[in-house]
Structure formats: structure tokens, C-alpha cells
Length: 180
Ligand code: ATP
Ligand code: MG
Image (cartoon, rainbow, N blue to C red; front, side, top):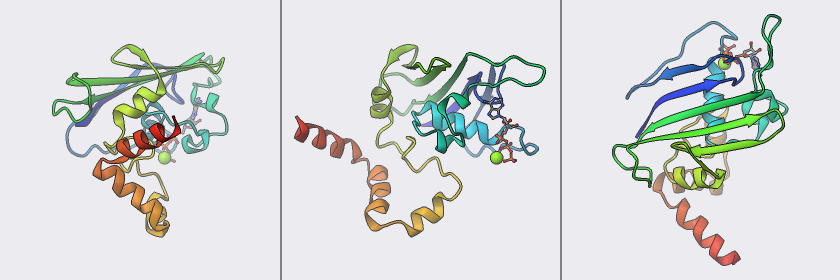
């Protein structure tokens, strides 16, 4: 399983549609300060369901929508699609390629879809649970995360290992059934 590409339209500095292809192995993004490198990792975080504007380096969620520049109008919607290779069937879905999309309008409305089928955020969470790619997973290591992990309480460190071991799904289902 690996990220194949990301498509962004109206997300932060990406006013026009932009597709970035990734390949297996390491991808490095280089560019001058302020050119949008971190906006790409913000887009990955956002499409995977991030709900905290702070984690996206903003104050309000609306700030993910292209705000316009002196010469360009702002946009009314941000859209990001992350395409994941699922040839090995790591994600519990029959598709070889899984496209997760999130849209947000200035009105505050959000939409999610998996391979163009509208779904709930919860469906996306369940799909990526235990794979390490969720926003709470360990595949998105933001600045400061390493020192957090090292200085974490043992319980929080345990959560990282539980995600890696693939047992978060069972813990969540157990908690849900206990609530019912
Ligand atoms: P550095 O090398 O300094 O880390 P970077 O390449 O990571 O830079 P980013 O932080 O990704 O740069 O991009 C910052 C740019 O994105 C700024 O110019 C900022 O104005 C622009 N930007 C962020 N949000 C929006 C938005 N909603 N609309 C338009 N532009 C935005
Ligand atoms: Mg940066």
C-alpha cells in the first residue's frame, strides 16, 4: 500500500487543479520558502479527516479554501483526492485503487467520498483504521511529533504500537458495543 497521487483544487495555495504523482519509495518535495510544500502534507492530513484547524496550521477550517491573491479571486470550495494503491488488499475494500475525497464549501458544508461514492467521515476512519495512515496514525509525522513520542506517557506511546499492531479496530468495536 502506498500513496499514488494527490489531486488538489482550491486547497490553500493550490487555486488551480494540481496533481502530484508519488511512487513507491521516497518522494522529496523541494522548493523555496512559502511555495506550498507544507500545504501538500496539510492536504494529506485534511483529506484523511483532520478536524482540527490548528493541526492544519490555521485558525479556522475555512482557511483551507484558497483565499485569493491580489490578482486572483478566492474560491468557494476546496477539494482534495488522495489515491492509495491497494493492490495488496491492505485496506478492507475490494478496490485495487482507493480514492478518498474531501470537499469543503465556504458555507461550512463538508463532503467525503470513497471512489466517488459519497460516504461519512466515519467510513473513511474505519477504512484506514489500523493501517497507520490516519491522522492519529504514525505515518504523518509532523514537526515536534518525534519529541512528543519520546516524552509521551507510556499509555499514549502504547496507542502508537496498538495502531501498528492493528488492534485499534477491535478496541473501537468493543467500546462501541459496550456503549450500546
Ligand atoms: P517553508 O519552506 O517556509 O516551510 P512551504 O513551502 O512549506 O514553506 P507552505 O507553508 O506550504 O510553504 O505555503 C505557505 C503559502 O501558502 C503562503 O504563501 C500562504 O499565503 C499560502 N496559503 C496558505 N493558505 C492559503 C489560502 N487559504 N489561500 C491562499 N494561499 C494560502
Ligand atoms: Mg513548510
